[in-house]
Length: 258
Image (cartoon, rainbow, N blue to C red; front, side, top):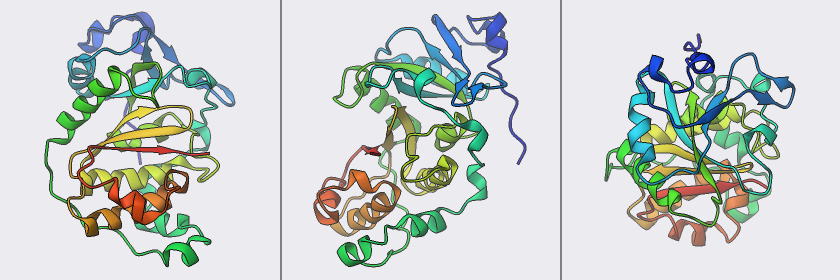
């Protein structure tokens, strides 16, 4: 699949973003990877912490030029994205993978005794809000402070869709669970389609998405919980039944990998 042109190099000569129709605050271009500088900037990151309203003000105009917003945690104990061991050169394309195949393969062998065989994908659910509106609401809530996001800064990433953001930067947060993050992005794409998710925040080893079509019944929550267990077993420590109860009506999902 051909990639879209990366608009970020234009910001090297025009940090304000005016040539792209943007009004950017002071920030920096990031090209640091585990193998040294990448051939093009992987993202732009604001130099100051995000404030409520920033996501909505910048996200829409940026998306029109091929840049999608995400919050980055710059104070999670592992430094900023320059220190995250990004691996874009070892990342495939999300569209080359099937979400159900990925989840079935990620279903832990030891889970069969504890939770049974892989049950298959959950059914699509009904939207309770526009996905981009729900994402902006969550970004504003995170800007006001949440325990798993210590110092959120707004970043812009060249990506086709929100679900592709981790793959676009070669994010290695789940490397102990899945070495090619594009495979997990294939799942995120499926969640975009079925649950209206948007990738809203990334830390060194954690990921937060907004949810515009959350499960509304215990049965729906149990089906979604099984997918979460395959996607990120570390986040389902208390057991599937207890975890499923936390998903009903939830507007965000948070995952972390050990």
